[in-house]
Length: 116
Image 1 (spheres, rainbow, N blue to C red):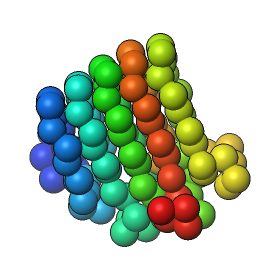
Image 2 (image 1 turned 90 degrees about the vertical axis):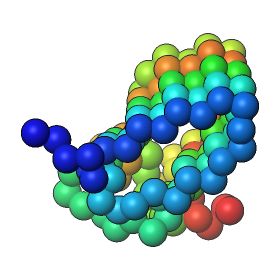
Image 3 (image 1 turned 180 degrees about the vertical axis):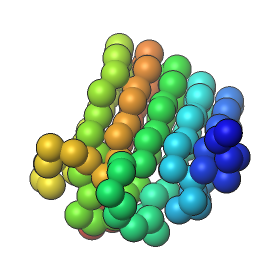
């Protein structure tokens, strides 16, 4: 059985939201359309297994804030979307956050706290 405390589902439409995630939330799924959202991981600590974020966006803007030396590994399908991953500076085989994207239109920024 999967605990709700370890998972978080976010659905936003036509809103701007700042979401301060809890370190106990290992797996986050977010569906965003026609809105702006900021997901804040800056107070998380590294762990052996990476945290997971599944983003499904449609014509939306998403900012993902992570601690300064984290690497975010990105995979998925994007179409007509701008993706800037500032964590490439710290590229490793395995990231501290795995970001899976399904996107049509919009903008995704993955930013270390050094650049905020």
